[in-house]
Image (cartoon, rainbow, N blue to C red; front, top):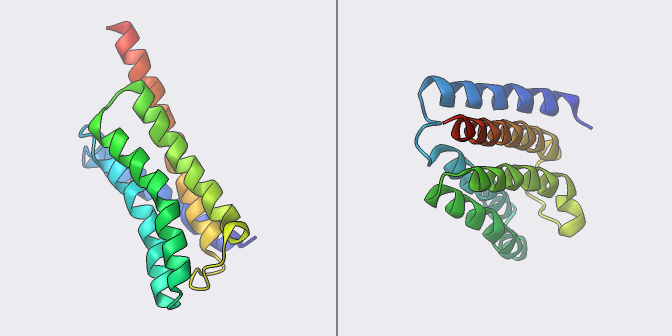
Length: 141
């Protein structure tokens, strides 16, 4: 395990959440879904960099689920869709960690699973927190 990549990933996740909060990007419903939709693109770039078009095709097929989750979360802001979005982030972290078991993309850096996985888990946890705080606010109102 690459502890440096893990630590930097945690740091980046905290910065992303803080920037989204201070710039009030949590209020509009596009910020976190858009971020989830961009995560598969890194794998596409890695495949193109390695000139492995079989890996690119595999990455494109695997990204459909994440893009679908991001689209559904963008279209509706409710407790259920925020939970779905949080699950999407955590599922992407699992995808990061088990990526080499599914197929090989030679362009992926060796430190990427720890880095991207830690970002995904922390942001997914924060989105879950947002979902449950939204549910609590709706119950109080």
